Image (cartoon, rainbow, N blue to C red; front, top):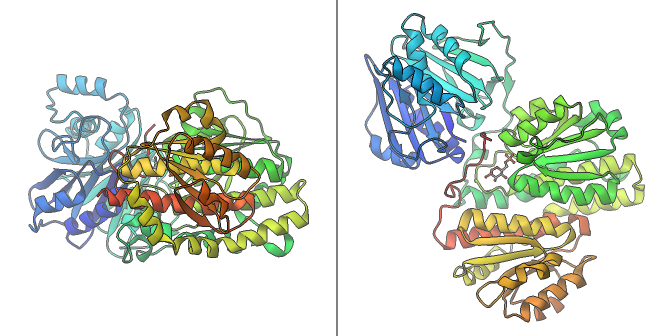
Length: 609
Ligand code: G6P
């Protein structure tokens, strides 16, 4: 949420910063801005809207300078406008900064700074930081002014700051909002995540909470906020720039939907052991004994990752025999959860930076639970703060609406079910059956993707509706919820996901010829029950799109449109049934003319509570 990037080196900073902002745009696109240190002045340009509007405003003008910072904003305090856009400057135009996070005590800081004569230009919380630094910089050097300012701030921040009086320097600081420092041969890039760094170098340092980096043209130093030096490990990034580009697809979302066979393969490669009917998860080896003794799992997550957790609950309870609860991470720490060393708090997060999920994990750590993570972004905060975990290896996901991360999360949950199940009551025969069916999933997803043209045709028929109901039962109830979330995120059609058995207890009142339903109805143990539900909708004139199992001809009698998925085990159907729903949402969203990679008001990584 908000992307920040800074550059210091031998090249012109502006084009590098703009390119970096484009990679971070998924974090927010309410406004963008850039500040570059020139000979005797700092040039700042800002624009409401996407990074492309900022580019238009710069209009091919070459901005001299090899040191600069930039920001793409997801508004929290103050509406999107030029004056609320970052970078924010001090009174004299000497110091500029970009900020990701929320300053909780900004009102009191603002009023005390205003009394000292500081003039504020924006309504943001971020602007107080730059005035605070300015105040300390009257007596202290740049670095010490920043350190003193940070001591007074309450809240969260990822910061990059420049100062005309010490022009060959960027100071960065982190508390609660991620920052990665890329270390090139003769240049440094500081950014909210590695996607803005990887073009320049694959050598990175992940800043930890409470750390400050002073980055100069040919060296850098990391300290804590009391100026105590820190020894930082350099990590090598294992993904390339090509993985973060569209590769001929119209949108990242479509590319990522089509990458799912590979993402599922990558999540299970070397981990799924068909011959033994189990899974090997290196990231959990150190806690193997504790896992054996577990008597409860609480899954904490948000958005699409939360729905992956709901599917996980069905799998783990049915096949591993462990009681599972799934909690919205945003609620978890505001309850008084009862945790002990036999409870695992399992975070599922694509970004590994979602503030609510991170705080839930911290609560788990505080209360002595084992904390585990299923995380896609290597080196992210959640990955680092959990006791143990499993990486998805889905590669970078850029589209704001999550797709391949979801199916790869489900794949990891299946591996976890096999691992824990085989430690408990699951038989070798059952384990082998699940593992060998799982092996077939990537090919089966490909079969569904090959129907994308037909799905596009079906989507066209539904562009005119204002409301859609998504229904499913058992393993596919969370998929109905995810299908509804997908379509509302990117097409702004009001959609409700509901357990199909609950439909008769309320939502059926909404049904008429203008309120269609999507029914996820594979041939599984609740098939007949779902058919009854479909009949109830048909009896009230509602249109139905059915997601059904290949060869099910009967279903055509109850549905207006049918999309078929291959046959698999009931517990694995979510991996298949979600794919047509992603495509349906994509084609409805694009059919209505929306930029589905950057849906309004949303951000990919929500690093504020
Ligand atoms: C945001 C995104 C969703 C995502 C959710 C959780 O709301 O827009 O697509 O599912 O955050 O993100 P995480 O990175 O923790 O999986």
